Length: 310
Image (cartoon, rainbow, N blue to C red; front, side, top):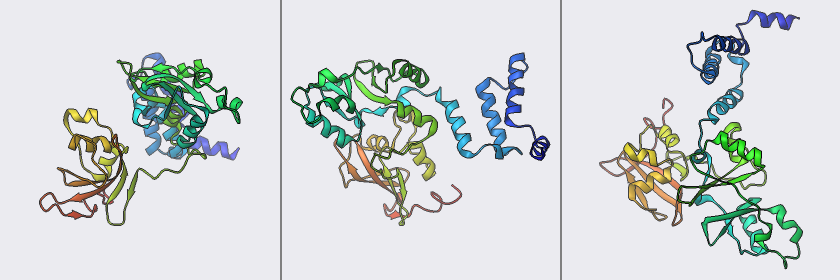
């Protein structure tokens, strides 16, 4: 009873606030917008109000992720074409097993002749009947159908379709029939729950690592906006901004090609990107140093760029 009394002494809870806003929406008296805006406003009030302790940061992030989920498109969450692991339809059993082992995936897309001609997918369970005796194995006979969706499709619609069709993977195809990427159920879940560590997947290095000498080692796929926030610099403007999402894309834009390992690329704001790892198609790992534009001498990434106030 004492616990109930204490609760009555506190300010109205988020639930009470939500019920009040819903009544306003139903009666047409609300001027704050729709239900989504109402929930977002309430969460902001919870951040600074006397009842802020009612939600943990993790709970608040979960609700905000769920609210923004419906605004995402397939091309916002898909695995890009360059990262797709797939096998040709005439691949033998041993090579299929080896490909799955190397990729660390239980499902692989199956294509005919080239990746733009996706014909299905194969699950590791489909291989079990042939374990130890692959003489009668034919990938075309065991592969499953894979749904095809456009990159502009809403993620919420995709999730509903995957639930209805019991599909765990879809291929993303552009208007010309080329393969843009793929999406799995796990990719969609991550958008709401955040990154989930796979106990069977090898540990990957973090996307951004601050070194003792003041430089930053970064994954080529690091989000460009996240990098700009870290550096306190705008790295790309104009129409190109809409076409580039990652550090690798930024460097490609600067030199109009994929640079070689060991090559250094200068940015006009006073940065030098040292290519640590790359292949003919993409940039994998980069070391970032700030450079004096006049002297072209490296100096530490500190103070005005990475200081506590930024």
